[in-house]
Length: 433
Image 1 (tube, one colour):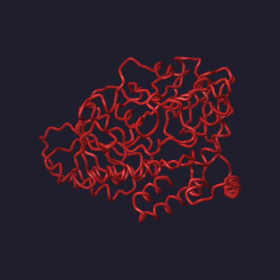
Image 2 (image 1 turned 180 degrees about the vertical axis):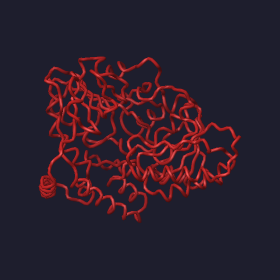
Image 3 (image 1 turned 90 degrees about the horizontal axis):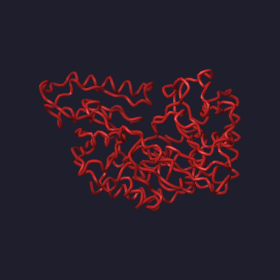
Image 4 (image 1 turned 30 degrees about the vertical axis):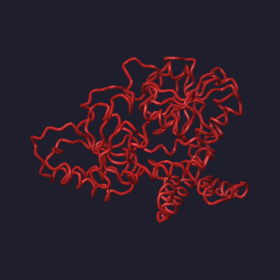
């Protein structure tokens, strides 16, 4: 664990040198930023930079444009804007329901909700939402994509800093998406906006929105809600355009951010809106898959070590594999689920063994939620440095190393690593700071 703590500190100090908004070092998104994190850990990982660079180029050649679908009301009527994500499951008759803030758009008609929409698009479904703008994908012809790419590549020659890392992030999908979104910001960000609230992930398009509104009006206040609990928050380093204030829902996060990210007076710690207290049984006897992973083979290898060597007689026969909601259509996730289920069926675990635990794979914030609910945790990692909850960042955790890539955790004190929300929603606290 000492080596992991040391390497986490070394890498975090390294990436703090990059304050450019286009740089996105994320441990749970297999992009060029992740390739560079691997490289900063070990120079022999240079191959990952090459691999993810070509993945980025492919993504750039496939990306479409975006447009805003809205009602006839002008955005100038709104002084409060929430810029968030959503899909078809958030659409109800006459209101949009937000998963991050647990709010109906109809609860406060003075707020403009701008929803970056993913999923199937039927324009008829977006009619009738008075205070909601939807940003949706607008398909363009292949020749337009190619022409855009060559124009974009030519513009790199005009940039001032042409070093290797700038080149990599310039040709990243996150940077392209930032530029596509930038064309839409004047449709809802204006000089009269007093509050911009974002479920904040440090993504380049979010930082561009902050820059845009600050250029419009210095009086505008930007609040970033840290809605998730990443084990290694490399994507949340402070950059040139950063929220004025952050909201966290964890004392561990609060302590880390005040020491490594921003001043204490600009951080507030409130109970989570996204995650509420619930029946622990909803998270027991589950195997949770991450939003993405690198190798099915490597995960299955570690899973067999956990199943046959570490758990021994503990019962997994009634366990359910839970895919990540954002990866429901992923073929590699479906394959991994089937292989895990096959290994469970071939095991000889004691059917009468009572258990109170679940298994988590890869980078996921649900581990803390389960721990706060009193559930025992086993964590299979692919890259421990980027995925485990080390006590150098999460000082409320005791970390037990079970093998090179399998870990378990215990809370030192409840209601410290995650402040789960109550039945009564405290959204007004979020917009009043």
